Length: 197
Ligand SMILES: CC(C)(COP(=O)(O)OP(=O)(O)OC[C@H]1O[C@@H](n2cnc3c(N)ncnc32)[C@H](O)[C@@H]1OP(=O)(O)O)[C@@H](O)C(=O)NCCC(=O)NCCS
Image 1 (spheres, rainbow, N blue to C red):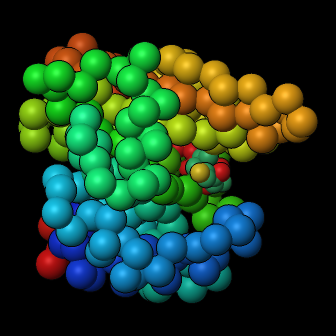
Image 2 (cartoon, rainbow, N blue to C red; image 1 turned 30 degrees about the horizontal axis):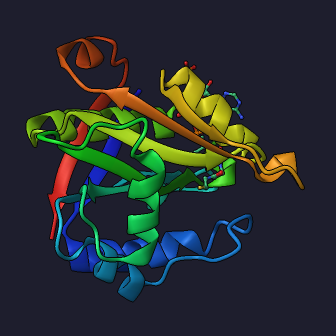
């Protein structure tokens, strides 16, 4: 199967993210387009979406999975990112290295388990290598079991664990993958990529 991926410019990509997040009932706080623009505006970033036909109307192609990532620098000013960098300080080397943070992403329920997220992740890794990134970092929680299982399959390594003594389901897990040619050699998906906007 060939996966059809669109890589978006910021303005159109932000609107597409706002739209697709409406389909994710499990996200307590969905991102708005303006939040996305504010976060990504002044840094290297990538917005990718995979699209597929609707099963009951195959002529209609819709976005079914997405992934948004951005550069994370040693000196951030946004309080959320400052906090993240502080937490990563003992497990990620920032000096003279370019770090990509996987911010948000997912696959719509009806299309899960069909390789869409792997295809987006592989596209993200190819783009990251082309753009000089050294490492991809992601944060998740114990209770996001689907995502943890998926990150395992995608060969992300746990680099830090922050237990939540009151509720272990809320404990935070940080994972990363160091980039290099060998990462591309292990890719499995066939992808057609279109740049939009
Ligand atoms: C996690 C998620 C993105 C996976 O998307 P997906 O398109 O179904 O993933 P894929 O089909 O590309 O699977 C990629 C790999 O992960 C594995 N995988 C997928 N779901 C899994 C699960 N629930 N448990 C274990 N492994 C899983 C697949 O077997 C595959 O491995 P393989 O390629 O070695 O066979 C999707 O389930 C999702 O959107 N979940 C909710 C969103 C979420 O939790 N987001 C995080 C909020 S921060």
